Image (cartoon, rainbow, N blue to C red; front, side, top):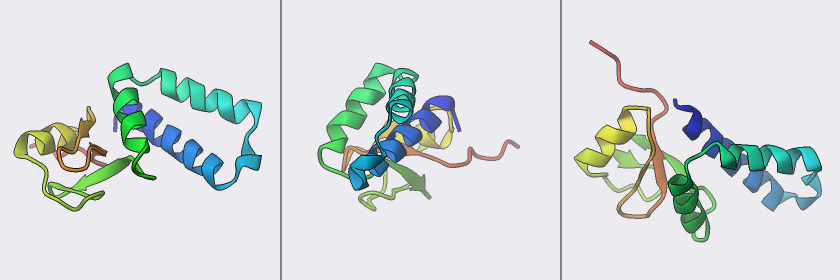
Amino acid sequence: MSEKINALLKVQEIENDLRRDPSLASLSLIQELANNRMSVPIEFIRAYDRAKKRYKNVIVLLINGVCQGCFLAASTGVALIAKSGRSIHVCEHCMRLLYCETPPAKD
């Protein structure tokens, strides 16, 4: 999994923790959140922020070509990009960010 995927997953985790319990907010946690957001390309942060307005979990797995947010099949192109493990893609149905946990095995 790429560093930008890990950074976005960490952003989601921190924001969900803060939403559940605002008393967890500390300078170090806010700094970690900011550092992770800065390590992700701006187009992914924008897509993340747009989808965050609608969904609690914005970044979801793509399993067997199916978005685990809306449970609809992704197009072949989207599935191939997400399965490469190097990038994130937006689900064309629910606008969540898709990723695969493990890249495909190399022959």
